[in-house]
Length: 331
Image (cartoon, rainbow, N blue to C red):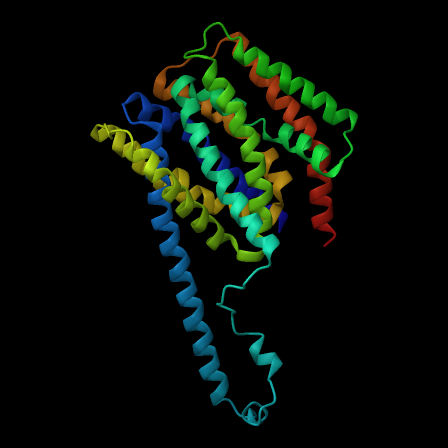
């Protein structure tokens, strides 16, 4: 199970690596970040909603077909006399959405809110900083996850975690002080803020998927994001060329709709800690794509900072990831 989840996370990381590059190209083309957030989430919600409801319909039809076949089989007198055929009923897929408890609703609401806020902050960060820098800084989420775990659950902070946090923090300083950076400090601070919000999204979305399932959770959070960002987008004019709108369509279909379906499936199978660790491979591909599309050449300061950030993240996540995988192997 964990090997399949790992594969899904690797694939999603590769797709995610192009997101900051395409988003920044769209912003430089003149599209406001608010419109990017709305259009991405709206396109994705249509795709994911259609996939979810078609899937439910097919499961319902399969259940009805299996029920009809079973009723024509001999030896079903017990069913007709009112005695449940437990063996048969266990084969019929349950197509009803369970009404979860208050805790599950809270997890779903926090996941949707965190996703919306993260997408807004992340998009505005790309307005003021390069795709490579934002990609690296936004992957500081494991550090924030450790801090949240310590504050909320009094989780023990080991030496490895302290070392990882220090390395990542030092790397972030290198990135912010890069003499060849483009834009201003707002983009860097927003990228760090998106990392903090992303850590909340990963934790609470993994909890919500246990009660609602992957399909419903990703459709719900995309729909909420689209609904919340529409009034904000309408407050600014939509200015875009055909090229910019083309990138928006790609962002909505591939980099939002398809990739989150893959990523959340990976979270469900491998766990949130492992998911966050495997996302650290994404910035390396982002740097390559940034050079390919925008001719952004990383400086020595940027390379040192990025290496420190990613090394710190891997050190922090090495023990939790190993423990998570070991626990799943014993299940």
